[in-house]
Image 1: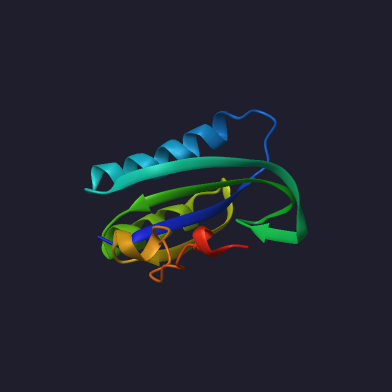
Image 2 (image 1 turned 30 degrees about the vertical axis):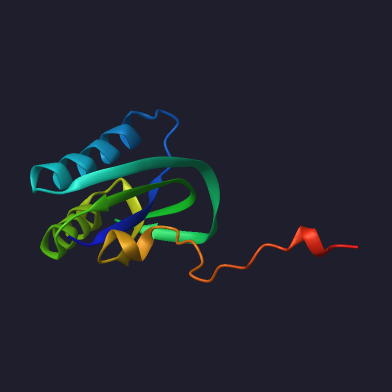
Length: 122
């Protein structure tokens, strides 16, 4: 099952209920279709780099959040379609992080640098 990261810009609203509902919608969609949610991060409210139009509304501020998850490609595509139709979402992008855990885990270098021989130091 591939590893994905979604970056979502939600329409800014002073009440965080809408963001909570949007994140819950995305996470339950992944979980109900056999996926695993690895982590969710809220990045805060930011001014958008340019005015963005979504669902007939212009947005100048947005709430950024990310979610790391494992899912089948079909599950990921359905999540993208679901978020694209949601009026709370300004933009959403899904990045494929890798196919296996070895693709995304930090690796130690394979070469070993020999330790200095301290017995021969003058």
